[in-house]
Length: 423
Ligand SMILES: NC(=O)c1ccc[n+]([C@@H]2O[C@H](COP(=O)([O-])OP(=O)(O)OC[C@H]3O[C@@H](n4cnc5c(N)ncnc54)[C@H](O)[C@@H]3O)[C@@H](O)[C@H]2O)c1
Ligand SMILES: N[C@H](CO)Cc1c[nH]c[nH+]1
Ligand SMILES: [Zn+2]
Image (cartoon, rainbow, N blue to C red; front, top):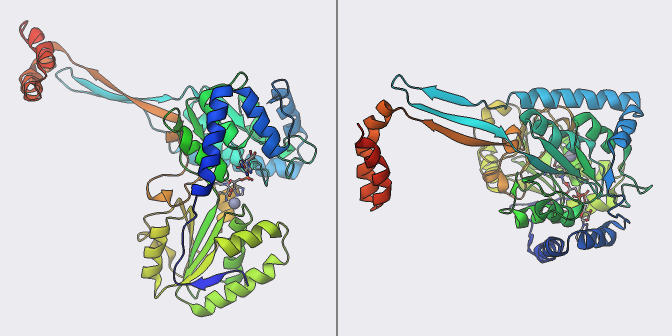
């Protein structure tokens, strides 16, 4: 029996990973490539050097051209849907021109360089390549640097998988390096002899990647903490236990630290889902990962009613929240904290992972309380614009002087007074 049926659930304790990550980040910061390639050998068992760390555009192009037709079709459709969704997020520069000549505005400027992390320790993630890079392209980022590890578990031949290379080509990456983990995040944050320093690091990853992003924040910007995957399903008696069980398993298979939670007022449904999880588990590979994630970080909670279920979900603030209930739109307004909300019995979370269009890089570990999904706004910055004519300046001069003097900042007041004298 995998799921405990409980009244309460604890959160993932990240502190035991944090010290190791700090050390990795510091070493890469101070010794560059030497530490980067040592850690790559240690954690990925890969012989990456300055000579072979970068993958050429020709290699990516070849991977794309040789992709099987059905996968190419799926990838292109996914690309187009992600692009269409993110085009809607674009913000425009605006200027407000008043009749007295005062102009106030806001420019939206793409970031010069971003580093995108594409995970690759336990699975290959071409879908995350598209989710990271397409919004950066829509925003107009000048240089997109992608990193991804070549772990033994995923890259049997010691090479980045063809589907990842193909997605990178389709999305239009500028530079691709075969490094991963906390060491790759540190390399992007501080730069090394071979890895360029970037302005912002985005993208999902395991606990080491997520904590490393937190560690380098301030030296560079980051999007959010997008760590081990999470799903929380609120279900009532209208839910199909097989669908619910499959959706819970879908996120559990990502990582031993992934979390799948069902909240329901129906004990009958809870028991059926528990049974279905056991049955479906037996048909799946990746059982080592599934077992750990389901036993340690997953739970079925029985709540009195759907109102209470929504309150608990808001406390947990999950990455993905499915409303597997008869009238999902009725409950949507009650959900305040979730990376993405999936409504009804035919909007399973994996549809969002691959094809729907909204971004699948989402905040985890309760950070959906204040972080948002990755989007075009992550790849731009705003800059304010101010322009006054003498007439519009004189109209505000006295109030600025009064305000400045109330702060005892007389040079500020003087800057206005010297101009006012010319009135
Ligand atoms: N939140 C999101 O938006 C989102 C999206 C996609 C995937 N994910 C998550 O991304 C993660 C992908 O994980 P992954 O492992 O497959 O790939 P990954 O690339 O994130 O991590 C692999 C790297 O971890 C490092 N590592 C492994 N063991 C280590 C150790 N003991 N000490 C230090 N470093 C170590 C290695 O350097 C390795 O390259 C999963 O947790 C998945 O749930 C999250
Ligand atoms: N569910 C993941 C986000 O937590 C994204 C993903 C990519 N591929 C499959 N799933
Ligand atoms: Zn997934």
